[in-house]
Image 1 (cartoon, rainbow, N blue to C red):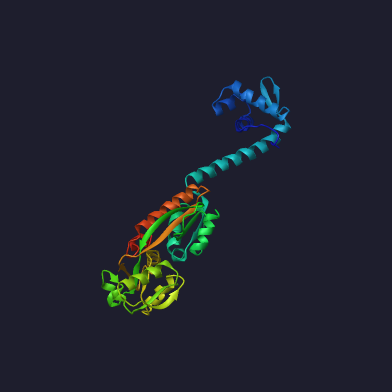
Image 2 (tube, rainbow, N blue to C red):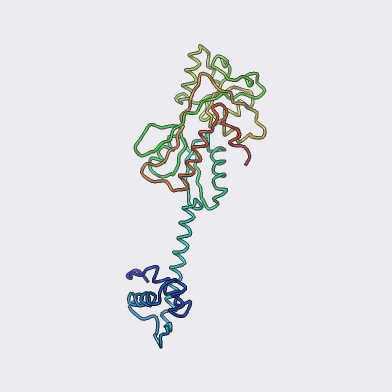
Amino acid sequence: MFSNMNLSFRQLRTFREVMRTGSISQAARALGRTQPSVSAMIANLESELGFDLFVRERKRLIPKPEAHYFLEEANLVLDRLAQSARTMQEIGNLERGRIRIACLPAASGFLMPRLMSRFVKTRPNIRMSLMMRSSRIIEELIASQQYDIGLAETPAPRGTISMQTFELNCVCAVHKEDPLASREWLSAGDLHEKPMAALFADHITLQKTKAAFADAKAHFNQHFELQTFLPALELVEQRLCYSVCDAITAASYQIYRERDPSLVFVPFRPTMTFPISILTPAHRPLSRAAEHFCEMLSETILTLDSATGSPGQFGPD
């Protein structure tokens, strides 16, 4: 009913207070304004509507039937505005909103859900979506501005994506009862001819691992070829092989088996890094909630120990 009118919040609030108190003077006191200003506000409202809402008798205002109907409409508008104001305050206080995350497999099973649970414990009205995708798909989802946050292997720079990049040291997954588990670090020479689980041929970690073995004149015996490192850890648990993997995978394992781990993660020498990036849309600003989650994710990645992923960071809450 207001589409062709220029009604204001102050007019509606003043009218409601006049109806509630029954007089201009009491409404003025409740609103902290003068009687003439309240009278002028009501007169302007009636002029905007095109008809009188009150009958004036001996300095009294008697509401007409139209006033009672209009009060219902005014209450709906004012209550809706009040609710919107509360919602925006909750958004500003990081208590409401939605965050859409696309995550590479290494972190999507355990590490990212652990961070999400910590984030929403004090923000129960924040809705979060988590989709596990390959790094290549994540790059496209962020570039097309469809998701708020992506965690992926570092892509080539492009104008539609903002990136925060980390170089995480790789580690060697070893069964805790294996003699090599007590070593301070392991080299390619220590793994000469031992069965290994590694990724597919064109993955950067396999290329770096094979180069390290070649430099050490050690034989790289790839017994298992995999799409991700997580299944490699099951094979290492069965004492079928070793695996040089990234710190994200190591941290995920420690969350999964935090009470009874079968593996240890020994630093690999020479140092071999795995590039990973937090991706965000370059042309769509993040919400305040998404910004704060990005900060939390960044701090978590930075605290990953170069060897094991800092088990204390992901222990029981």
